[in-house]
Amino acid sequence: MLFGNITVELKDLLNNMSSLRVLYLDDVNLVELPDSISHLKHLRFLCLCGTSISTIPRGIGNLKFLLVLDLCGCTNISQLPNCILELQKLRLLNFRGTSITSVPRGFGKLKDLVILWGFTTHSDNSTDVWCSIEELGPLSKLIRLDIRALEKAPSGSMAAKAMLSSKHHLIDLDLIFTTRLGVNGEVRDDISEEEHERIEDVLANLCPPTCMEELDIIGYFAHGLPQWMRTMSAFGSLRRLALDDYACCTQLPNGLGQLPFLDYFWVKRAPSVQCIRHDFLHPSLGGEADGKEEAPALTGTQNKRRQPHHISRGAGVAFPKLVALGFVGMLEWTEWEWEWEQHVPAMPALEELMIQDCELQRLPAGLAQHACRLRELYLRNIQHLVSVENFPSLVKLWSYENPSLERISNNPSLQWIDISNCQALKELDGLPSLRSLEWWDWVADALPEYLRRQT
Image (cartoon, rainbow, N blue to C red; front, top):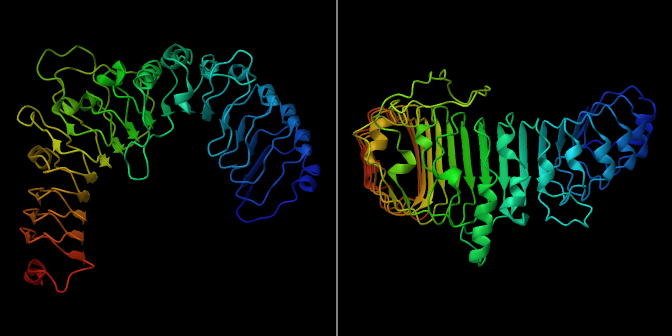
């Protein structure tokens, strides 16, 4: 195992290590993997992360006992050799961060794969030597998977051949489209209606199994949501959901408040969402319990395998385990509805909330009322936010570039505040526990009045 800025003469080294089981090279100075690697008949684990190699020797197919091949960050590698298909015992294959854009046809033969990171979608072509997404279908043992360049999938029917919904061991899935957002977070390309429909159809046919625990969807740019995302309450084991570069869709998935184990929900760069409505958060209200036994409660981000969970309609708490919540880069977001606050408690475990780059006018009263464990609040570039008040448990507050913010008041547990470039701020009041305050303003000539009163 070698790490960091080390130059290795691997050819000479391997000649004297015929019994080697593990070869782990991380960010070492290696530009070529010698053919002699094929002589390591007992090798089980091969990591070449961050090296400068550009090719993989064809003889690697001789490593019949190899279980792990990790090429993460090998940016000079652009192709996997066909001999990779001879590694029938392979359980982990990682080529994230490489230049590999296609996978050899016949990839579905690697049926022992448990973790596959970096699989790149390729258009179906019967005369091509590269495989399409359908070759994921036979890989029934997968636990962790990411699929990239999904915009290349020619149709939803082709995506359906990946058979994701029938992979009953799959708990961690990344579905990645090439982003259509520019650096400024705005949609940068004209997208035809036909392409919108095809992309929605592709995602509709990539429905995960209900045992899923972690789901990241990156770069999705269709107008509408597929049916399985419109009501996600069926995914009773889900504990992490992240939506990144969510370009054109105007709504977030519904039913998330019903998920009993969801502890992390993050939205990053969703410029078309203008309003978060109560149906995003709304739990099942009233009705008889469905008679199913409640699953045991888990705290925080505990990663434990669970069976699909049937949720009692009378459970009565929305987001019961949510700990971290973030809305970043929702440029047109102006309103957050919280209409159901009189009916049911919500977010009782929430500890961290980040809101950044939006047009939000106010934080909903229900948030302060129900998020009784909220300790850290990060607010940045919220154009029309006027006040932060009445949060009983808040301990730390970051307020950066909020041009309309006038008041921070009645937060009895608040101990630490970091304020930067909030020129409209006039009032700090009702903060009996305050111990530390950092204030930054690059254009001010003097301390504002509210700071003079604090000192």
